[in-house]
Image (cartoon, rainbow over all chains, first blue to last red; front, side, top):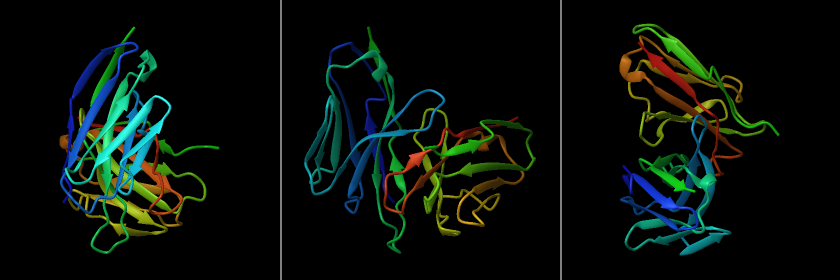
Length: 116
Length: 113
């Protein structure tokens, strides 16, 4: 099955700096790569996603890049703010052999701390 | 509108007891997922429903775990003979259809003493 590795496990930056989180995956069949933000006591919330036919996607201060050949994708947050502090998860989506399952496989998460 | 809701938010039980965890998906969402999140880990897939039927239950760790969705809306995750290793946050997510964005609930934190 799919294996998703995420680095770093913790990341501390100063307000206004950029933050980069990287993930690698093993299953070449994966074709959808979302990023989730999880605040304490809450469920994960989708912040941005990218599909395998696109190399880069940007939404205001957040961007994601994908390298399908190398099987890795990254989250970039610019001009970080204290409210960006949370745990961030990358994930991939794969189809089961029956072609009908859309389960997500998550990385272990990155605890981002933005210091004022 | 209302998001995915899960009850209870916290559940403390003793080893060997039976527990039920409930998920109310977003109205109209046909697909429903259960995930388990252990401390310091990402969510791990347990089971996926499309309508009333379990399309994939390959993530259930053993036969103590069972889930139902009898009317294609609310789902209940049932755990028999709980063990301390079952302690985790159990997350539910729903989508309009199987391949859509998954919206997560806040989770149920299960603690088995």
